[in-house]
Length: 90
Image 1: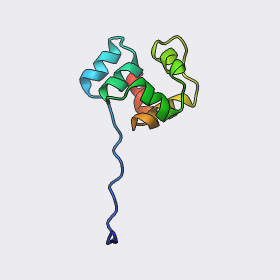
Image 2: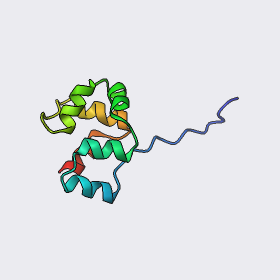
Image 3: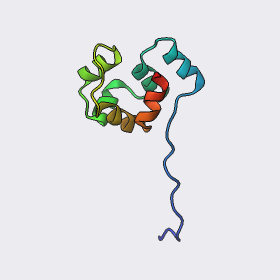
Image 4: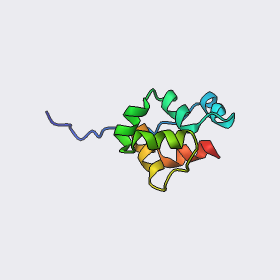
């Protein structure tokens, strides 16, 4: 059946709520907060972002800063934007 000219709404960009943002500001790892908030396990996030699980754990523990392309891959896997992720960290 044809769509009769109706367009699907654009996908919504996921954001953190105020309580989750506060958890990041209080020092909880940002990647952990995002994954808990959106109920995405680290293995699933690894598969969707194509970033190895060990690397995600390094980023989550802040033992290493994410490379330039990694926030984009993580954001796409979470259904948000790199800007939204970075804004919560600032």
